[in-house]
Length: 579
Image (cartoon, rainbow, N blue to C red):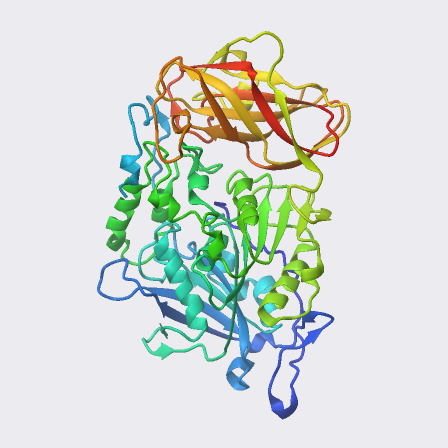
């Protein structure tokens, strides 16, 4: 997740609130003009209140049900004129002061899965900030004022065990899912909530129409609420959000860190967001996560299945507007695109070609407004008639609106890594001391297979796959593939990469040690891309072992062998191939 403060990620242009409009009898109403709610409510008169929603849980085992804190900003007319409004929630685990959590070292003598023969141990069981938006909603005028003046209750929610919420975080698990759903239910007239003095309060102002949005973990919590099934939750807008925690901390059986946060895992994340009072009450919960995450094998287990929202996408009944960065190496591109593919509800996808965060195109904020109006107030905003997929480049410019992604006309083109007589190529792992970019210029420590130079501009749209005949001289090894754009002037740029654990060649949930020097056919994916390469450029497939910035880093020396003539790369090429 993003770990730096971002003041206004939603990029909603600030507007001046207009004069409230009054219907007959003095009762204030939502005003819609030209297919959009209008800023008719006086933000200076908005009400701000703190409530704590009771969840049907007692995760800290203190004999009292957990409570989730909300800070609510709503038009004053909800109190003075009986106006009922829709709610737009931005949940966050980052509202409190984060504790200092030590990260484990990723420099190891050998990979921990060496000698591990099954997944039984595992089966036992940012963004860090955005606080300017989360904990002080009135300070985030561009977002809070924009929607409050148009007749929405804007709600900042502190997730379980964070800030002044009680209970214990569980890094995307069932506890956070249930407690987030409890907030939606309270806005639907179900359950209880309390003010700071312990008095029961109700959301009598709620129109029982709820949306949720946010970036990264803040966008993951809405997905958690949505997979609990049908409710008053009408739409979610997850931006660069985790759709599978397994894919956030693992890749095809390999322990893989989010970009920039080497060593992080489920337990580290939970400990980091544990900012409630008396955090020691959650010590057993943290110990469970540390044991259950199965860092020794990287295997998929019940812990990960509970946090695999893509696998549970069929439970989502709310509409979904997915925003995902195609150059995001924190919450990687696969996260958003795999959820999009799995959804069976009304949906929209916005892909931007930059790193972790959200769209910066001027068209995005109005699109979000049209989406929210349509699904929370049933406004005929025109959003349902727009193309379901929007692509934005690295310069914040919308380049394409289309019907699908990968874009129509994409086909998979399969090429051998090498031609000629069968041969075996070998390299020695040295990823502990060299990054992937440095290894491009270290022939002894990688294998590089250049594809033919492009004879015309060529667009890749989707997921590339590699199938390789591989052996290692140990029972376990890291295996990483890089897809590299090689320009005519010699400049090499890593377009995308993918990782796999050969021990999980048969199953993500079961590790099998390698027989040293035995050749195995392995197939694994790269992260999705959408890039156009100019004519004259060349794609290289580069195979390394340890990926310094992402994988565990064993001592150098493991020998990896590849049979390139029988190995292939599968590329998602748009239109005619120039390969």
